[in-house]
Length: 318
Length: 286
Image 1 (cartoon, rainbow over the protein chains, first blue to last red):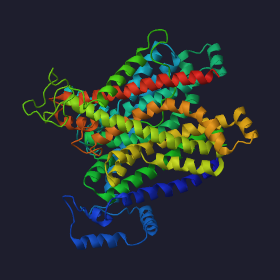
Image 2 (tube, rainbow over the protein chains, first blue to last red):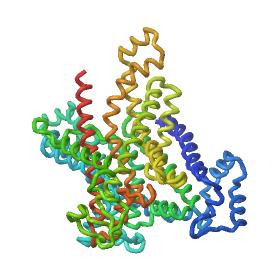
Image 3 (cartoon, chains in turn yellow, cyan):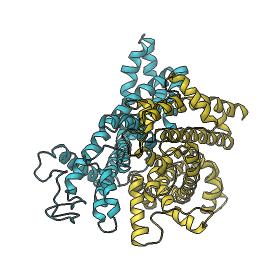
Image 4 (cartoon, chains in turn brown, cyan):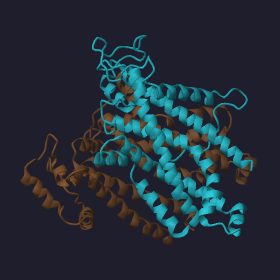
């Protein structure tokens, strides 16, 4: 197990370097002068003063070679220092820290709901494999796979906020202020994400379950006269859920993509809305910081999932 | 919105009857492709940027088949022109992604060792950036043009293509015909190009429609967020975003383009699934 974890950690190091380097070098894709762009030349809240632009240039050391700039940026980043917005003066790390809990809550609720939908659907489809029920579930997953997150979000907003008026369409209440209202404001966004996520989980579970149900120990359980529900839940589900767990980790990247969209639609003040508004305001350092944080978080979480996977299934460790 | 292609699932329609789950999508895509390709010549497709100020937010009628938007522009014409962008991006990005993925995957699966480690590393790095986030940022930094959009979306389809190609290469490289070619003194290049590629391309092609539908969804999402191709060029995503504020009073402005996008993606998925099942059957029959 130690060797397994160490090998995974060693793999993580070059990936982290590459991911942060890419986030850093995106800036140099910008046409024209980086300092001008950071000062916001050409936008409404521009710091157009030549002196200010010169100050930015010195601040960021733009006259130094790019490799040196990268390592000094990386050094600062590891201390939680990602620069500041030259338009509002806000620290990038502060802005991200403020928004992160909202996105985390959204992702957790969405993932929970997705698993909640996927497990019964997957079990049902595998139990009735090839029958009408299976076809119905499969058709349903097909329909949801074809719907981009923003369309699902809009339909939900229209149904439950505009027509039925059960949940608020926009607005965010902090959990500490009013926990019920907080959960209500997260319900539709989390549901929208869960609805794009569950078909994938359900299909993976169905396929693995169908394989498990052909194993000898299932026949034995049947021969012992155990009920179908008991066999499905107690004997078959656990050995069939390994792929599900990995997919939950891999899907996190897609879920973050979905969160960016869903947050914008339901006006949740998370990382996604911060990214979109920073892009529209051309807040370059903010965009750079967010990408770096998201990418490193994704890599780290997948490492955690890999390790968990190794802990659950000893065969993987070899 | 996943880059993990759909797992093999049962075909929806039964095999005996006429397969509606295959022919309806083919019919839809055929009509759409025809209209999109000849939009400029067809008399019933208006100018998508022309406003009729006497008919703002009109409901669908004989004159305006899908109604008009906030500025009195014909939604049908805009949907067709928007679909043109979606389909162009949705065709080129997966094709480029597949070519690059085949190249990487075959090298990784055939030579193994260092090549494999490096390529798996590259794939992991691309996967570390959530696809919409990556696309948004590159379009932001490099400019939202059609070319950049295609480049960005091909990059997002590299990881899955590489993995599929690598696995097929691993399997086929063990087969006797490769051994036979090698013992006749064939070079690595010849084995890869003449012996392996034809066997790997076919199953890979079976996935391409799924990648097309994914790319079309990402393009729609980007346009919806306002970071895709800028106006006045109509895109399905930007039309949906423009209609969204009026969703209480004029839902058709939002939902009709959304329906077009949904049906197109669904059709591609259904056709792709059908073709993939055919390929798998053929392989298992070997």
